[in-house]
Image (cartoon, rainbow, N blue to C red; front, side, top):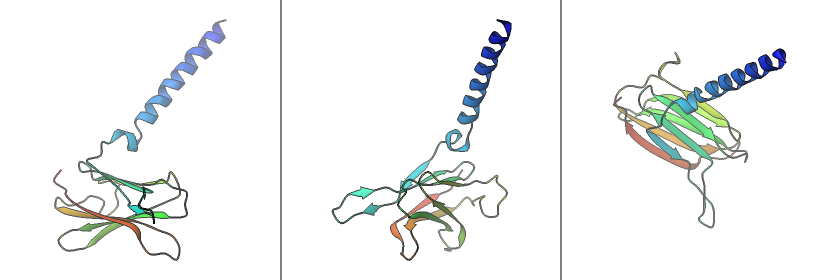
Length: 142
């Protein structure tokens, strides 16, 4: 009886810990200041949003997500808006793939300057040009 009670308490503690770890994952712990989607308009005018970009200014968190298993990858270019200098690129490939960058990850240029930043996101697959191209400029003032 005592062993069963210890196992029950241990299982409850494990579930509580697992819940805490999920809640602390980067994608859930950061609130997006800006969210954009690729614009894949088909021949009848409907829109299929296969790519998503989430940007949080505080910490320069970028989350690039590919939503569709359609052979297309989502590509993001991050630029200095005034000069056009490419700071970095990310590519998410496959449904559910999320690529991230942030100011604290130790990679050059992920700590974005406090100026206007241009994000260019599009879909591509081998042999095709950009599809659903979306560009947004943000005054990164945090």
